[in-house]
Image 1 (tube, rainbow, N blue to C red):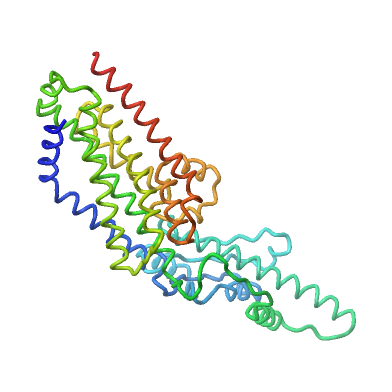
Image 2 (spheres, rainbow, N blue to C red):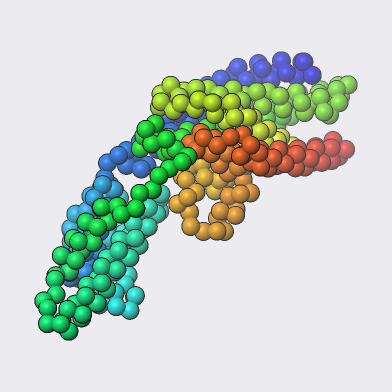
Length: 390
């Protein structure tokens, strides 16, 4: 087995550029997404086309948080042109009869965008929330008007009621305290940076692990595999000689990204560092077993090279590496996400790093990852032994 490990080490030295790129990309995309995906602290531009021009439509627009969105009134043509050119996040079209539709809850707002994204999903949620607030104020104004008219008292304008409602909301009649996060140590980008650091670390390490494990197919292409098969080495020793380098590479890359994340983004994991690394050790085991399965299942390195990016990108997107799953409203998609090892690793890492949970709180995540590893390894051995007998 020592000869196999030496062979893998020499081949890994030839691929050192790939490992550097994967490590760099995890850190670079953490910076890009952590500071840009959620606006980097600035408001996102959204154009508004108000075809109703009613008091209610104005009230609806005013309920949007000015800190999150910079709203500008535009014509339909201007809004469509800006969205198509990518100059704004999206445009919102309010149809005629919008005020009348609030009475029977049939209101509809059209959002113009080029593609779905986390920002669009957040905007849609903001639209729903703003409509509910505006509709509440509108109905309150109608009821107040009916009561005051009966007494012969002039009804205040909708704008006055809206202003009073907004003021009451800003007064915060209830105080919510946090027992998990220390507000003095929390900054506005902390959670986003944690999510993307962990998510992209998981995402890119899978490429390094699986392509390192794919050297089995490279050995077959170079006929080295035939010499290994006739050697006195057992199947376990042969697979271990390929498995160990992939596992070590995965752990090393994840450790480097965590170190760079703390140094570049000020993410101090503190006592959670060891627990996060335990979770990542379990994930690397699962990813290595997946790489082993793919290496013994595919017939050639070309097939594997074509399929692996699709598999990794697809499962990582579903597992939440690209965006927080908290913005996903589909129970079906959440259920599918739980079938991915990325989901369990990312969920555990976020609990430990962002919410100061203990290792005992993520034992189920670690257990699921180890269970996935066992299943993937067992299937790999079945396929390997079957091909050996063929």
